[in-house]
Image 1 (spheres, rainbow, N blue to C red):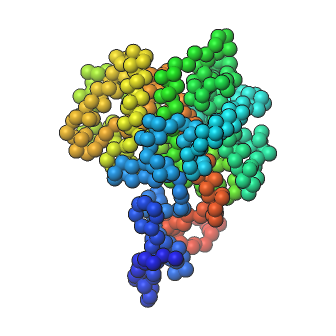
Image 2: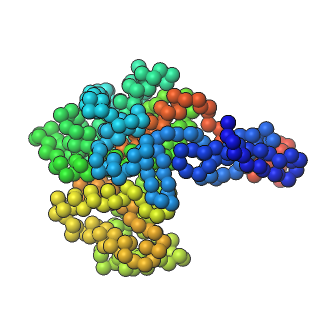
Image 3: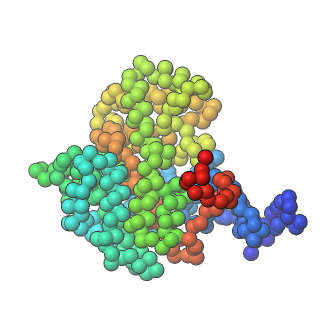
Length: 430
């Protein structure tokens, strides 16, 4: 029980309503408004931006201070010293693995990278020009038809098997979505390669010759996966939890998360960065577009600067910037037109008084867009790659919810439609 309370006085209700206040390990206190329904009241909170719908031990964000912790570990420490699969273990199990646990975990993921052979024919049902996110959403949702031996969500072993399958197969399905769109043969995974290296092998390899994946590019891709692994109760994660609260199978829940991620306000942000760079077109036009961005009457916005959650700086951006610099130096393409525009915009954002005052720093989407463009990944695949990285976060939150006490999600509404009225036959309507 909480030893702190808030008191609410509502016109028309004689007695004040006492509401318990809870404190988490970090972050602001939370007022429990559950007692309001007994008084015939609901809260009104569009976007749920002031509502905690769950308790969680996985990820903590302090947007004002630019803090992102996974199980208590700062994101910059994980990005610099860890790797994606080790971070997956941390998110799933709550602690960093021992050397033996890490080896076993990686080997188990590798043993699940193949997909059912009939899934290859499943792809033929899509148009060749379908967006890769449309394909990924459909194929992941269909996995429950191929792997129905791990769908008992009440069985912890089933949940773990489903988690391994999703983490392992998402890069394979993502690469297949890309290969299908360009008419190239699917590449089988090579389990002698690391996670990110294997993904690049399946993306850019072909059956005619052995793959040679640049280790600098593989490390950058691993960082992209790691830095997108989880981000607390965002739109897609909340969608996964809401779908899961009905008892839906994990493959359906992750497909729901992919659908939510597809939106340009969520996972499509780095794709929007490249579209913006293409709209600017040339370094000589940057000043014109920066002036438009400063004009409050102009709808144009510079994409990839500032963040809805981080009011100071995006803690993921520093590591992503380092990776971007490494990739551009390795490939020797700093002067490629769109990348030259991006570097100039970065310079302006870090030094221009307008951007500094408003704290519109380059964010993780800005730098990840640059990296993916440099590697040669088309913009249509950007959100797909985001989905690959975020899969473990979705699974961790789904598993946390299913493992505890939960109830089906049922948001309320403020009804503003017609009051009750009587039906009028069609021949009597004016």
